[in-house]
Length: 276
Image 1 (cartoon, rainbow, N blue to C red):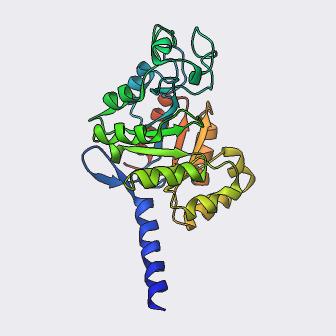
Image 2: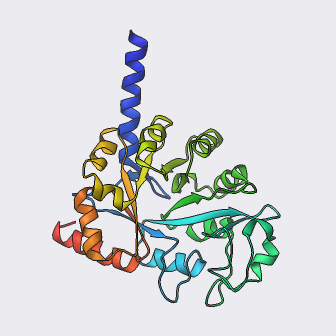
Image 3: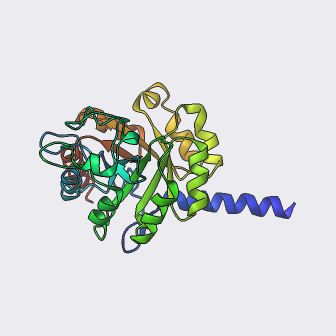
């Protein structure tokens, strides 16, 4: 009986650590608690605001200046094996070009205007941008037959930024692959439904992303995830202050927001009110 008991104790200790550890560029620090340390602000696609085109270097720089603790970026593979930042399957919506990312080479993508003269950045350029800033990258791993997951991990390791990257997996297969490639990479589950929460946790995911609608429909959902040893982040998109405050009161630990300036204002006010 001792073996199973020891395994259970180790599991509980690990779960507790994954809730409380949130490494920075220089050291491991504590994940801010929603009541006394504030909420983690994650700039969704770097922020989606006029003048700062989503998923571009200028948007990421702005998010850093506004104090975002993390930046969410979308990874896709090109026809010639490069890794670029692009949310959609095609370039039609966010550039002056057309076509699927997987059908285009990096050189062809580089010729496109992603807004205000910005080009589509590569993953390596984003790594170089955030290096030394203490900002964490949340990678949304898009489903793509040409996205080289080994290359994603290798580039992350080469830039010595493993502790500042969270891999966002959309399925259990990707979660297992990234955990096998580098167990030190933290992971977030972009679960497709509430029924996927426990399977992701059983596979060792560190953070669970829930949609606001799920939280509103079931006010016990966050508590359930927390009871399993995992923090909850949510994608709030362009939600305004009232809704952001509601999500915080319901217990989320982190918010992916299109509006990093609004998040900064909200967090600054929270710090003043709580003497932080």
